[in-house]
Length: 256
Ligand code: F6R
Image (cartoon, rainbow, N blue to C red; front, side, top):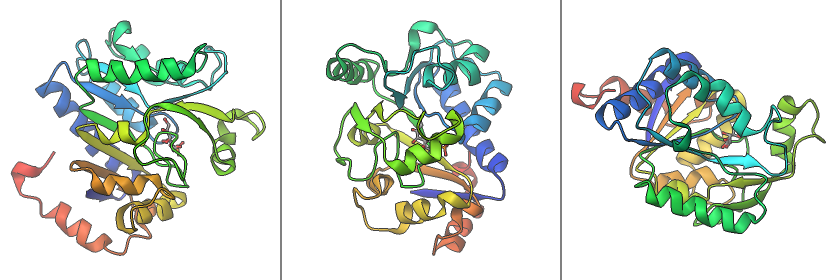
C-alpha cells in the first residue's frame, strides 16, 4: 500500500487526478472503475477541469441502490451524470452502472462481471471508504472473495447516507455492489478518504489485521493500492511519519 497523506482534500485529490490523467494519456482505451458519494466529488470536478480525452474510455461504477426510479436525484445514475459524465466526452455505450431496477438481479450481476471481464478488466478502480470500512457497498462480514451481488446496508451506512436523502428512513436498504473479489482484480486501486470520521476505518485498513469486519483491510493483499488521504483521515495511523517520509522522498521516476 502506498499511503499519501496531504494537508487537505484538495491536495490529496490533485494527486489522485494526476494518477488518472496519466493513465488516460498512456492508455486512451483505459477501463476506469468509479465511486460515488461525497468523497470523489472534488476528483470529478478536477478531472473535468483537466479536459482529458475520455472518448475511448470505458467506465464501471461500483454500486447502485435497488428500486429507486432511475431519475431519482440520489441514484448513482443521476449522481454520475450530474457530476461527471455530462461534462466529459465519454461515449454513452461505454458507461456501466449497476441497474437497481433489473428484473433478474442475480442474472444482471453475472452479466456485469462478464462485461468487466470482456472490457479487459479495470485499470484503475477509484474507491471511497465507509466509516465501517466498507468499499463499494461491501459491508462488514462481506465475503472477501465476493463478486457483484445484492447487499443489505448496515444501519450505520444508512445513517451516514441519510444526509443525501433528508432522512434515514428514505435510504434504501438494498444495493447492488461489485464484490470484494471484483475490486481486488482491478490492476490498481485508488482510495480517497477525507475527514476525522474516516480515521478509524483508515487506520484499521492500513495497519490492522485483515478481516471481513473491515472489508478495506483486504487491500493489504492488493499489489498496487494507493491511498490519497487528508490529515484528519490519517489521524489514527501509528506509522504516519514513516508514510510521509516515504512520499516526500520518492525518487523522481516514482512521482505522479
Ligand atoms: C459509493 C461507494 C461507497 C462510498 C462510501 C463513502 O460508490 O462505493 O463505498 O465510497 O460509502 O461515502 P462518502 O464518500 O460519501 O463518505
